[in-house]
Length: 107
Length: 119
Image (tube, rainbow over all chains, first blue to last red):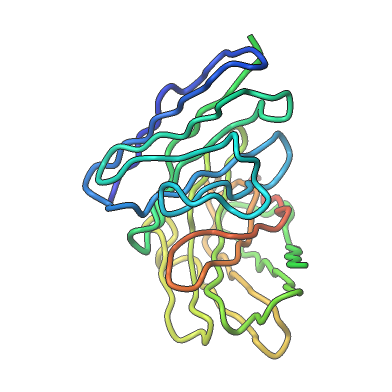
């Protein structure tokens, strides 16, 4: 199975900061990488798929990049609503593996 | 508007069984792969199982293979998972999720139902 590893596990940042989260796959997944946002007590929400395609309705401050085994999620200017946990997920194989998550906290 | 509403969670003893349901609306249910994803308390997301739109193809995470059975009733727009031989480590919030045509992306998610396996 493909393993997904995110870093960092926790990130402390301030409103207005540029934030980058990294996700690495244990083998090449081309551009088959999605990002989800989850707030406490809520279901995850799809942000980005195919590494860089922004889901409809998601603010343009979110962007994704990468291919092969290394991917990034960038929030260009962190907003109060963005404090949450972010998960990557490979959508190359039917096992749909998730990363362990990155919690974005208020600094 | 896509809506997914899970039900059937609760407290069950180790070794017991439970069936979860997910009522879907707002889209052509029989056209989409559906999945179950779980999240243990304070932990990350774990994909559990998926079923094709017709119901003819299913797959499972190794952690539940042989114990869980996914199914769907397209006439009722409802997804199910039958969970047998439950273990303490199956304790989690279980989400149903709608797929995307041609990709293993989880597009829309329900609000989840909590399953607690404890004596």
